[in-house]
Length: 255
Image (cartoon, rainbow, N blue to C red; front, side):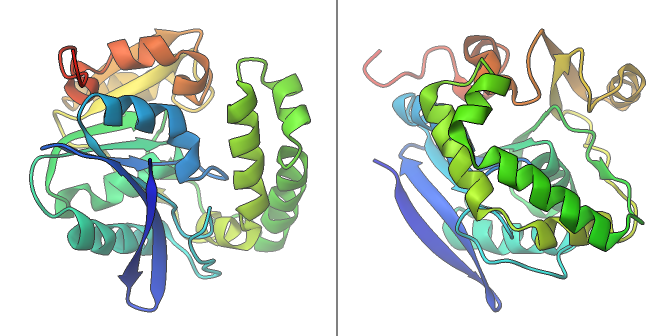
């Protein structure tokens, strides 16, 4: 059973769902408007396979505080302090989805990483957007996503639990925190050579040219045809299979 841990980052507290146990720790970072709970099925699978799992609520998401001055850099700083408090030992495997992947890329060189996995993310944000317009857009999107029935209708690959979890994430999501990120400066962090990118194919977020650019930089690009942006929601078995470094074929407890 997962337990919730709260870690201090100066005056900010990041909420973490800490579950499982084992000699390897897996850090999970959700995408924009998601939460630590978005990883529920992945977390359960990893715990069953003998992993300790730390699923983090990034600022303005889940049960973590709001931050009207949030940036990718400040979120990365909060993440680093959280990891230092909970899991400073090696090896550490980290997976970041979409926005969470960008935060992971910004923090990667200051984390004790053994493996970094980026899930359908370009690890970049285009800045300069109008803050008020973004707040209005995020608020409208949030209102729709709070309805679990609407989520299941528009995302038929969601299970009932997926829809409930994502509706709760939307309810807790702060549009002001999110708008702060995209109304600031441009952000881009290229994943280090040896990192893994798991990409939906086709992807609305990771263009073919960008994937080719990362591959040329030494990133191991792996694709899952037909997957949704939240790859593990729509293609869970394929997601597990394509990441033996994370899940381990022979690591299931009791196997």
